[in-house]
Amino acid sequence: MRIPLTYNLRNLLVRRTATITTALGMALTVAVLLAALALVDGLHRVFRSSGNPLNVLVLRKGSSSELSSAMSEPTYRNMLFKSGIAQRTANPMVSLEMITAVTLPKPGTVNGQAVTLRGLLPIGVQLRALRLREGRWFQPGQREVVVGAAVARRCPAAQVGEWLAIGSSEWQVVGVMDAGTSAVNSEVFADLNQVSSYFNRRDQYSSVLLRATDAPSLGELMASLNDDPRLNVTAQTEKSYYEAQAASGAPLEHLGILVALIMSIGSGFAAMNTMYAAVARRSREIGTLRVLGFSQGSILLSFLIESELLASLGGLMACLVVLPLNYVTTAIGNFNTMTETAFRFHIGPAVIGIGIVFAWLMGGIGGLFPARSAAQKQILTSLREN
Image 1 (cartoon, helix red, strand yellow):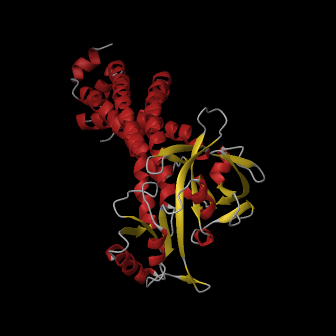
Image 2 (spheres, rainbow, N blue to C red):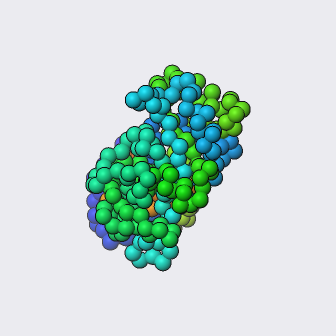
Image 3 (cartoon, one colour):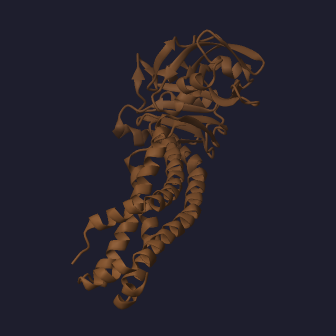
């Protein structure tokens, strides 16, 4: 015979002060874990949404990122006539590009905001899923830039019509581009020749981005590029390159989990203390339940369920506390590009599910020993206790 669930709910309501205090402690622990997971999930969403499945990014062999890669113009020209490259208006969809890290002024900071300045050919814009939110695209031969939406949002000086100080030169902002949730939102685009000339890198570009004709030709195109001894390059899909960059959030994820685990020890002891106090106060109730015919297993399960209800309350409170993070935008340093990547925290069903399960684990561990203590009480001993 099982003890009704209403018995546990009534006991939690009667001891509302202890219930709320313990639930708040659990909620704080779960909230720390959820915040860390939301941060990493938001960063992963940015990199997962970046890149086109048919785009191929070509770097110098041995390079792990565009920043550390060096590509010459003759190498780029040798790629133009590879079989399997998509064409647009009889021209191959291949863009020679150069990136560098620059610092833009940012309110409240001394060193400013590090962003990626990408010099590219006009075809490079067409290779990406972009739309102009404001203004126009840069004109070749002019010191003009188009900034990503995240850059414009975080840097008041990066607005259409303003002049940005890049190095010792002034570049006019002529447009704001929107790439959805892509990492491109954290970049600044400009004419390749202007960027390479200003930074004195006329024959030391960074990468080549090209579009395969279709999915079947994608593998053959990458194999042709990788196997060509004249090029000495590594070709990979643009999406796989960005997905590899998501590893920059791993240290924060591990730190958040570690802090949450340390805090969970304290929360588990708090739950255990609350349940032990409940067992001590309800000794006569436990004895009465045994007299009425409830088994030791029923009493153990009842107290364990009560602990889990307490943990569920803490988990739900944590979810409510962190849900507003969905509207918070932040940025993290990308070790591959040495710049900041802006993203929004993401509290999705998977993150909430992990938080609830984590709360249940704390409740189960904190309630198991008190529940066993309650179940093992002798009937006469329980009835005699005050």
